[in-house]
Image (cartoon, rainbow, N blue to C red; front, side):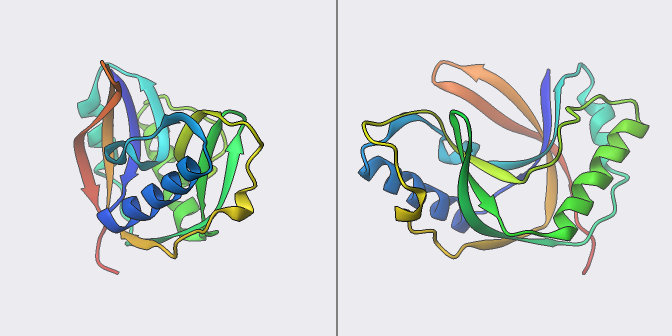
Length: 172
C-alpha cells in the first residue's frame, strides 16, 4: 500500500487553490492539474508499506495543537508547480514530531527536507514562460485540526487519495 501522512485542506483553502489553477489556465497553461479532491499538504511520504494500522497506531501517539496555514507565494520543482505557505515554526515542529514518531515505530518515510507546499500542476505546457507575479494569490488560511493517513492508488483518471484514519489536534 502506498501511504502518506497529510493535512487535508478545507473547502475555502481548496477554492483559493482552484482559483490559482484557473488563472494558470487563463494564461494558456496546460498540464496535469491536481484535482480539487486531491489538494493536500504532505507531512511525511511513507511510500509502499503493508501495514497501515501500524502507521495509524504510531500517529495516535502524536500530541499537537491546531496550527494555522496561510497561503504565500508560488514556486516550482522542475515540472511540478506549487503554492507555498507562510513560514510557520509550529508546522515545521509538527512535521518533525510526526516523522520522529514514525521512525521510532520503525515505519520508513522519505527523509527529504520538509518544504511545505501544495501541488497545483504537474508537467506544465505553455508557449511563453509564465510570470508567477502575474498570478493573484488569494488571502487564504485555515486551522489544521487533524492529520490524516492517506492511501494513494492509481485510477483510470489519475491518482485517488483515500483517508484511512486520522489523529486530531488537542485544545489550543
